[in-house]
Image (cartoon, rainbow, N blue to C red; front, top):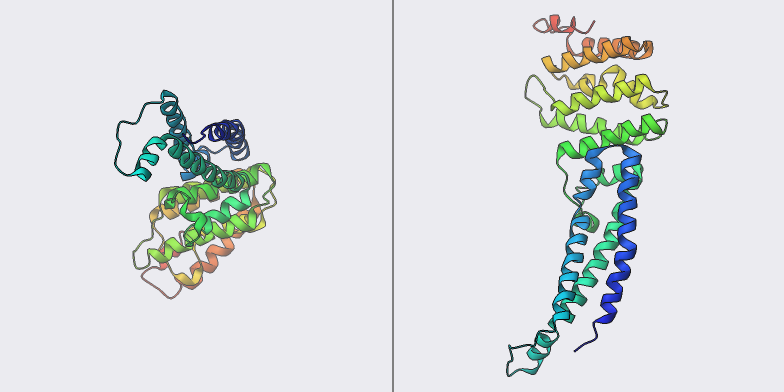
Length: 288
């Protein structure tokens, strides 16, 4: 029989090192973002799932090996007999190697999730044909949008808005991409979570002294929901309702600058989109 003890020792060492790292990573992610969806997404990563599976497989193979069941499937071919006689050792070696490989990827994932910059960057680049993305869980639109918004909320609340430029630009592109994808559909209605997180971010900005000038301007002015003035999107009833909820929130928290930004941008948006268009001229009055 081929020696199996080195693989057992290696697996024990891996267990002793890996699980404290994983538990610590889960705790750090929870403490950093206070976001259930980010933590759940981390737990759904392929490397996280397969690491646990491979650990279980390796333990099962060790149990099978300890039984030392004699091989009753003998063939006339010596190479095949060798493989059958040493199948437990071979399976354990393969499973341990695969577990180590998976653990290396998982460590890289924990580093990514522990850094807001790296996390948003990974979301932005998830559609690129990179090897690392092959081992990542494909995120749907809602999950990736929510993760970015949760990172921004955490940054505003805990870090003074240090992620302002990176996340604000990414989220604005998401709103813009949705508008372009829905071009021709009138009026434009965003998914509900687009409106909800717009409101949540504004609420955090108006109740925390975060230094996030880019997000403040784009959120306060309504630019994320309205889009660029030259795009000429017809505004839906849902968008009107949420815009006015945002204005009421700014008034409630005595944020004059947000109200001024909204008035200035909505006036600009009205002049470009509705002036001269008599069929929709009354629609412009709803801004002011």
